[in-house]
Length: 118
Length: 113
Image 1 (cartoon, rainbow over the protein chains, first blue to last red):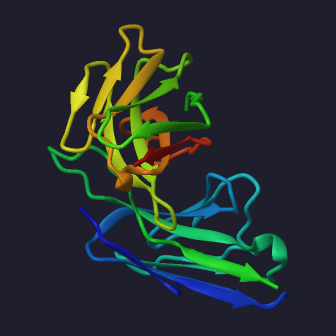
Image 2 (cartoon, one colour; image 1 turned 120 degrees about the vertical axis):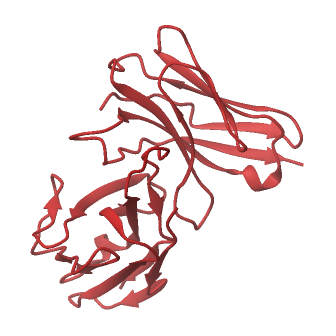
């Protein structure tokens, strides 16, 4: 299993500023992901954070707006740049542990970061 | 990944079984059915998954129809703590495309005292 923590848990930011969200996993994982959950909506995948290379972004998300780092196998950051009120969402980090013979591809999620942009 | 259809909401009396349906009529032969749930203000939590056989674990049972076009998640004795949004997801098990989870709108289950 994997326990995921995120910092900050919530923040209120001004329009035009940037916020970096940190994601820490308590064990090495193969893949890490960032999701967005807008108010009252389901989760949408932003990107896959690749260790040692550039993140892979889903349609509608770009690196300039959501730069992602993954310096090692347990840590990743997501930056929300030049924020507007439309960026107010919950941002969730997710991780996929290394597969074992008895594993079943379970993905673990962090508690989320609740961002409000004024 | 195949799309899924779930009822937007359901109620269940505390202590009774909660049966949550999911339609996935376009599921491919190599796609599994996964269930996750999201309790308010938390990240999603894995519940169970299956291919074609019925599965059971300490949390729930998963019943998949023989043609695999639909499934039902069963919480045998629902408690107030089971109040959450339940997501049915189908995806391949391994290899390319197996890692991303595509979340639909899910079913909001309310367990009533």
